[in-house]
Amino acid sequence: MKYVLASGSPRRKELLGKIIPEFEIIPAEGEEKTGKVLPYEVVEELSFQKASEIFHKILTDRDDQLVVIGSDTVVSYNHKILGKPASEADAARMVSLLSGNDHDVYSGVTVFYTEDGKERSFTFSVQTKVHVAELSEDEINDYVATGEPLDKAGAYGIQGLFARYITGIEGDYYNVMGLPVARLYQELKSHSLL
Image (cartoon, rainbow, N blue to C red; front, side, top):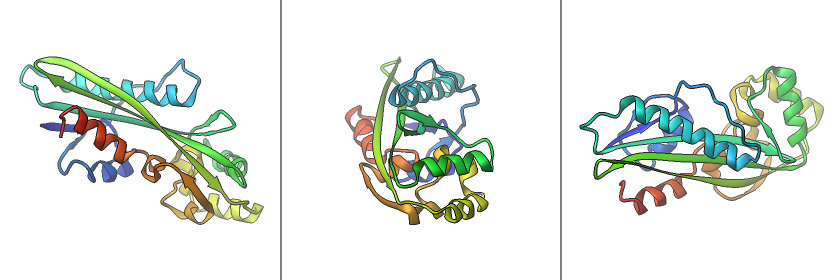
């Protein structure tokens, strides 16, 4: 089988390596647009777009063993999606919202593959609840000053410096990092793709 990850995320690369030892990385380049509003629908649609783009870009008549995996992750607080912050001030605003509260992280995953010469795909999403301690204004400013939150959805990475503020999670830790490893493994196994 030829496996392709439709993402340039170093975290997703690391996590997919826990399931599949060898795969190629071809990041999707299409514009991320969705008409959906609910977080799980948004990540499912965006993961579908990413996987579909790369699958159709590299598919040839000889690719009967091609498997393309696309994923998208969002942070949702009070039913509103928090994307990547546009500035340090925006990052501080997001971290202030999360401070002392619970929020949800949703990852959508789509797998495109070929079976008996036919194109197939499946999509799923996983939700994890994250509990965050109360942060002081100084803690928020110090965290934002590290630069870590600027390229991350919701302005934090659970595996980074923000770990000190996370008091607990309900669900899959790896989902918060960007790829629900256990669910993806089970899905690939059930579709005979491993």
